[in-house]
Image 1: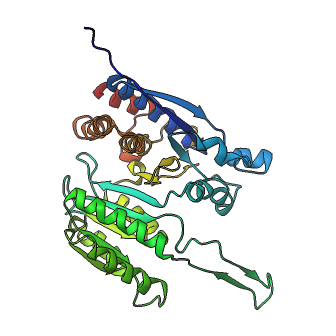
Image 2: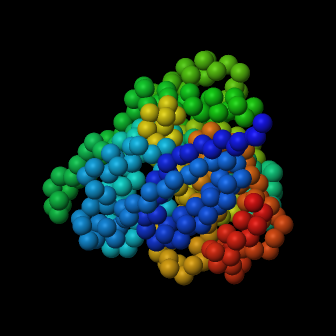
Image 3: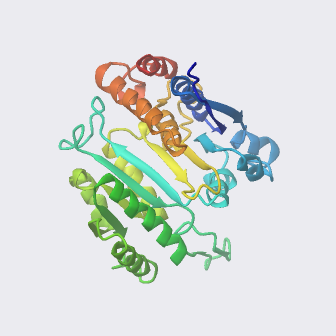
Amino acid sequence: MTNRRTTTTHRIALIPGDGIGNEVIPAARRVLDSVAARHGLGLTYETYDWSCERYASLGAMMPDDGLDQLRGHDAILLGAVGYPGVPDHVSLWGLLIPIRRGFQQYVNLRPIRVFEGVPSPLRDAGPGDVDLVVVRENVEGEYGEIGGRLGRGLPEEMAVQEAVFTRKGVTRVLDYAFSLAERRGGHLTSATKSNGIIHTMPFWDELVAERAAAHPEVPWDQEHIDALAAKFVLDPRRFDVVVASNLFGDILSDLAAAVAGSIGIAPAANLNPERDFPSMFEPVHGSAPDIAGRGIANPLGAIWSAAMMLDHLGHPEAATRVTDAIATVLAKTPVRTPDLGGTATTEEFTDALLELL
């Protein structure tokens, strides 16, 4: 009998976006194709030119039926959003946030590791010391749409911004975070500010305690966000899974990436855990217009995000092969892009990683 290798096919939407997104997404695709060939995976791609450039020419970051065009894909790989000349609130609310909210990607997952070969700016954070995950609520909280501006240009001008915390929204992200801590065999830390924010944060704390009772096997604690930010710097090794609201999670995850030595390698996943909609994966680094077009962008954030995508699609072995290659190229070779102190181009760095695959 002849053994036949079964191929699993996934439809991937590619949105390179702005700036260096157009350089790191092709690098991530090369890595995906290489590991897919080894693991019997079929990946088909459709590329969308949704970006600030599109906004400048057509007045919209993406078409009105953009979500419908993405809906049939298994996952979305995004490069970066934002470019000079287009206000950030226009670019984000015209593309990234509508996808997150329209597809109920309510978990923003950001793993943080200190790799050998990428020294942390902290003297006591060596390789293997820091391995944590920030679980950020991704569709409500402080980034609500309720509010407005009154009396523009007048002395009494005012701006009102409402934070929205719902029982459903908070509970589901807490359950995800507690379950993740259980799978990791670790503990959970909740970020709060209930000593200063009188309504939403005590509500958050109550729901954390409620969901902790449903996960008695997971040890947990809570920290006020200001103290937590300090402890991320003073002793990042103590943290495992950190769950936070939309704003607090956004800030903490970027701080943690800096603790790990470079925001250029940090990945992120925007997850719809129920898989009713496609999830979206993206590097954290942004569009970096100052180096766009020079071919020196660090592709690791996009490549690690692609590995998270493979894991989400049900291929943990393929994902581990990619993250192991990332660890090896950093630990065993001198190849570095300029942000990591080297001279390698995006293509040269990707070539080195592909050799290890």
